[in-house]
Length: 101
Image (cartoon, rainbow, N blue to C red):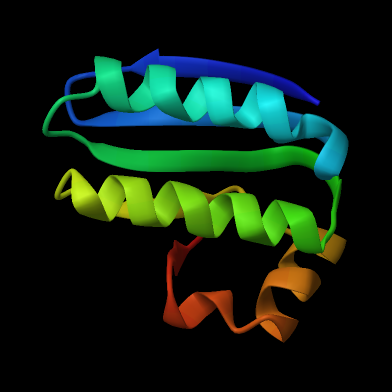
């Protein structure tokens, strides 16, 4: 999986591409730490438009991000979600935990 962190005036964005599974754990965790350090006070967006697959470990990683962001008083939104990725998030009821667009 590829990760990219960008910080703009209104929000910090973590862009993901490829398979979001357990193999991406270390890379995702490092990207989250970088994102939270660079984005003081900003909302956090996870851009998932290029994610082709995610599994239960990816769901756990998203929950970890949510917990860390909440501890820093920041909201997390999942954006660019579609196809199979959207189905997995819907089945897991993630719309109750995240804003999903």
